[in-house]
Length: 327
Length: 308
Picture 1 (tube, rainbow over the protein chains, first blue to last red):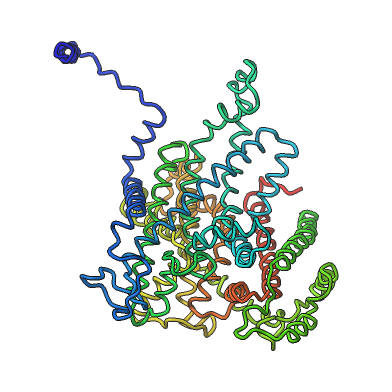
Picture 2 (picture 1 turned 90 degrees about the horizontal axis):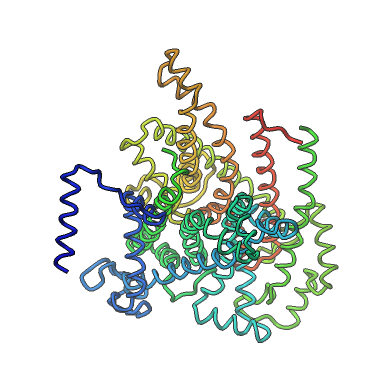
C-alpha cells in the first residue's frame, strides 16, 4: 500500500518537474452533462428543490406535526403560530401537514407522467419512425388530432366521462378500476386522463429523431451483423434519443403537476379530504378576504415547485444538448 | 393561395364533424342521467317526462341525426340546467365577453412579451437578462389559476387597488386582473421566443453589414434585426391561443367573469351535456380558424414559403 502511494506521488512530482502537461481526464457524455448541469446555478437550485420535495413526500408522515385530515373544530381558521406553523383551515386542520402530504400527490403525478412517457410515448415514437408506412400514419395522425386541441380541454372532457363511469361502475373490470380510483382518492382517474395527452410530444420527438438516425451507418452496420428489428430499435436507436427524451420528460412534469392541481381545484381531480395543492388553493379561495394565509402558502408552494422543475429542465437541456443553447 | 385557403376551409367541415361525433358519443356514453344530481330524488314519472321532453328516450342514432340537423340550423338545443335559456342563448351571451377578454390578453402579451424579450436580448448576460428570464420562467411555469389567485392577493387584498372580482366590460378596472392573469402566460412564451430569435438574428451577415456602414446600435436592433426576428414570434402568437382558452376556464370562474370559459366548467361540473357539446364545438371552430390564420401568416411574413 505504502509503496504504491509513494510511487503515485513521485510520478506526479516527476511530471511536474518535467513540465509535461497534465492529461485531461476524458469524461463520458453523462459525466460531462452532470458537470455542465452543476455549473448552472438555476438548475442546481431546481435540482436541490426537487430532491427536497422527494424527501418531504417520502417522509411526510414523520415530518408532518399532525395528520392531514385531523379536524379540530375548536381552532379553525387560525393564523400561523407555534402550534400550527402555517395556521389551520376552516375545519381546524393543520395547513403545514396538509401541504406536506400534498407533495405526495404532486410527485405521484410526476412519476406517473414520466412512466406514461417511457411506456407509451417512447415505444410509439420508435415504432412510428422505424416502421414508417401505416404505423407512422396511424400514430402520427392520432398525435396530430390530439395536439390540435388544448390538452386541458381534452383532459376535462375525458375526466367528466371517467368520473361518471368510475363512480357507478358497471361490470367486473370497471368495478375494479373504480375501486382503485376510490382507494387512491380519485388519483387513478387523473392518471388515465393524463395518459391521453402526456405522451404526445415525446412520441413526435422520438419519431423525428429515429427518422434521421435510422439512415446512419451504425444502424446499417448493426443490420449487417444480423441485428433484429427489436435489437436495432432498443439497443441502437433508443440510447441515441435518450437525451432529448429526458429533457422533454422533465419539461412535461410541471405541466402534469399543474394539470392535476387544476383539475382538483375545479373539483374534478383528487377528492377531499385528500390534500392536493389544488384543493388547498380552492379551499383557501373561499375565505381569502379574511384568511389570506390559507391560500397564499399552497399557491406559492405550487408555483415554486413548477418553477424549479422548469429550471431543472432548462439546465438539463443546456447540459445534454449544448447545440440547442441560444447564447 | 385562394385555392389553398378554400381547401383549408373545406377541410374544416369533416374535422368539425369528427369533433362533433366524438363529443356526442362521449357525452352519451357517460352513464347516469343529467337529473341524478338534483337535490331531491325525482319521481319516476317526472324523470320519464323529462327524458321525453329532451328526446333522451329516442334511439341513439335518431338523437344523433336530430341533433346534427338542429346544430346545422344553429340550434344547439335547450340547456339542462338553466331551463329559461337555450344553449345558443348562453353561448351568444358569453362568447363576446370571452373574445374581448382573450383579445385584450393577447394584446397584453404582445405589448409586454416582445419588448421584454428584446430587452433581454439586447442586454444579453446582464442582470436585466437574468431578471427577465426569471420573470419568463415564472410566467411559463405557473398555471393561470395560481397567477390570478396571487394577483388578487397582491393587488386587491394587500394593496387594495383593484376589486376582488366582477365584470363591467373590457374598459373597466375589473378587467385588469383577468387580462394580466391570462395574458402573462402567452407574454412569457413570446418573450422567450423574441429573445432567442433576436440573439440568433444578431449573428447574421446583414447585421454586420449594417454595423459596418455605421448604423447606430439602437437602429440595428429596432429596424434590421427585429424585422426578421419577429417572424417566428408572430407565428407563435397563434399557438398561445390554447393558453388563452384554458386560462379563461379558471380565471373567469375565479374572478367572476361571465364568459364562455366559466360556462364550460359549469357545464362540466353540472353535467349540462348540450351546453358542453355546444361549447366544445365553438372552441373547435375558433381553434381551426386561428390555426389557419397562423399558417397563412407564415407565408405572408416569409415569402420563401409557398402554399400548394
